[in-house]
Length: 265
Ligand SMILES: Nc1ncnc2c1ncn2[C@@H]1O[C@H](COP(=O)(O)OP(=O)(O)OP(=O)(O)O)[C@@H](O)[C@H]1O
Image (cartoon, rainbow, N blue to C red; front, side, top):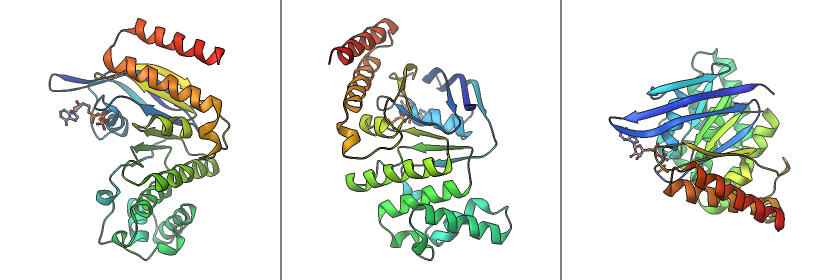
């Protein structure tokens, strides 16, 4: 599998405050990678530098393919209230001929189960439906990489589960490469093929973990799977160590401890 995204020694400083301290990782084509880290560690800064919204202070970001799309947490501010749902999804496709724009938007709305809501305005929809519109808009663009910044943090728990399953379904059916920032450890294990665990600020890579779960996931059985529970506690431990210390030896010790628990359980 080829790399869709390569991040090499990426660093960012706001004034004299170092938010990201030299991150290197790759995302392979078709992978869903989750990024977790303590609050304020620089996760959004990482996504903003990858998406080009801000210029990194150092390092390189290399994306195979030119298109990327971003889905933000705050759906209420990311949709245009004066446009219909269809109009919102078509908006980034303005360079395309009208018929193609229409067809792509209609198709993406079907993917997220909103084919019948095309003529409504965003404010006529529930929060979860509005976030589906934002996801449809991103997918209609057919991005080489879909970046998501806490995409389900503003909806209730039940809707969050539905949106997580929607994301897994569309990425499976359309082979989308996705990088998701989340503060929710369970969500990172449920969604991810891999999890990048970041330290407290300045963000550094504490661990790059494979998620040993089958591609088909289910909110009830997956979350009670032994591998899910073991990985969740491993990520929690790594986050805890990374939050209080940048000492690599401590990370390594936490990893060893967590692995020996997994093996003996
Ligand atoms: N434009 C800015 N100017 C100065 N400092 C900033 C700016 N944006 C972010 N920061 C600081 O950089 C650090 C990282 O912020 P960032 O929003 O990337 O973290 P985060 O991990 O996404 O936070 P959270 O978990 O709360 O969403 C924080 O300490 C923040 O205060």
